[in-house]
Length: 360
Ligand SMILES: *Cc1c(COP(=O)(O)O)cnc(C)c1O
Image (cartoon, rainbow, N blue to C red):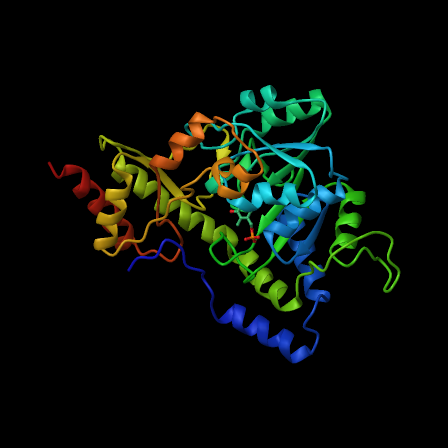
């Protein structure tokens, strides 16, 4: 079976973990600090704060900016549930703005329509590794004095107009095993604001800078040195992983062009796509997925239900009509694009997809 995702872990990661275990310092320690420094440099940010998941990074980013009850945060309904849930955790209200049909990212024009006196922040998602339209989003944020928190959980190293995602506003990254780089579970907040970085580091450790002195309500959302050691090795490999994803995507796009009934993944001018997913729009999507499964090719639907239609959100009273997202969930299919694929795997994905659409 060609899997839809596969972490790339080798001897270097094993050695790095062994070194930490042998040191006896296995909770948050010097490796976390080293990883934060390396990640902030990679992202082009002044500061980074490591946490134990991407969800935690989003949650802490909102809290560090003082977002909570009575506030509204505009975000995408076409994302993993954690995006909107992180807003709910703070007591604020997620407000959904529909997406662009080509990139599947939040549409700046739709953001403008959702701004109210309660709006405090915009949380774009760089979905599938393709940056959201940060030029337009930063302009809207500036005009309306809004905070920008980027859900960069799928877009390590992606760039918009030559600037890395996660460096426009406050960034949140995930290192879950299926992501472009991993620490097992893990996450990172990135920022140029010293105050936000300091607050984030307090919130992740029970609101304290100095042990047993608690200045605010915090949580335990710390990363371990074991995870950070894996992250340091993976970060060193990230550019290579990204290049392999981009090469695989190029072969997929060339091989899938011209199929009637399928729209290959697109990359907008000015954007560097890091292909967390290679996602097409497909007629007969479910039949194609079943056909490929029979040929031992794994696929994924990211995502089958928009967030505002999730049972829990309907219970909260969401009744939005967001037609672009509601159509996308019926048509999207992610094909394997990860760096563990061989050239013949990629060729097989192209051939079998073509075969499916050439059946009468
Ligand atoms: C993975 C992901 C998250 C959450 O990250 P975790 O590390 O799993 O908590 C949030 N948003 C998006 C878009 C993601 O893909």
